[in-house]
Image 1 (cartoon, chains in turn green, cyan):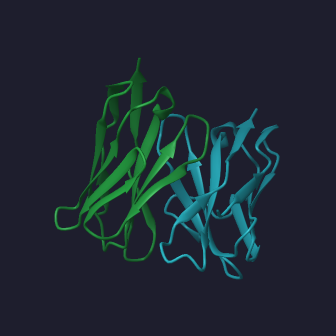
Image 2: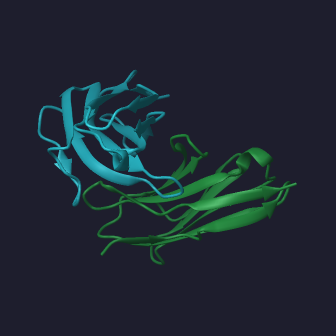
Length: 109
Length: 117
């Protein structure tokens, strides 16, 4: 079966750095997405990785290792507005998005 | 950037009535649109994949006769919840894939919150 694992909840302090991990086992791989979702809102796109390595975009970076079935989202200089759920999703061989359950990130002052 | 709209943003209806939700890609063409449902504190659940000009593909456990999907054009898909019941109350989100996008990214609409009394 297809499976994506990420921690249910994480807590971090404003100004700090946090890393949210995602491991996956899917039938095929055509890329991995990270989305941010605030409560009551639809997800918004953060990053896309299809090749191994680190993609940096401002305060957010995303890393992928296809051989390990592993990705992480790194958030730097945390702000209170970063409190949200972060969803990891993998595009499988049928170009269907397989979603993780999301990681709720709580930022404390 | 690619924009997807949904209408209505929220709807309250009586049990037994039908509700139609529209999903539009405003500045791009979408051969494929996806309908998701999300219950409080849970992740997105794919309900169906909608391809323009053909029948939707429903996920296991989703009743196709209850959740009618029509994708009549490259910019519009509709989801009709027929004979809605309180257990259908949820956050319904559509997404659309740009046919010219190499990344196969899905662009999400803002969602529709359905409350069935």
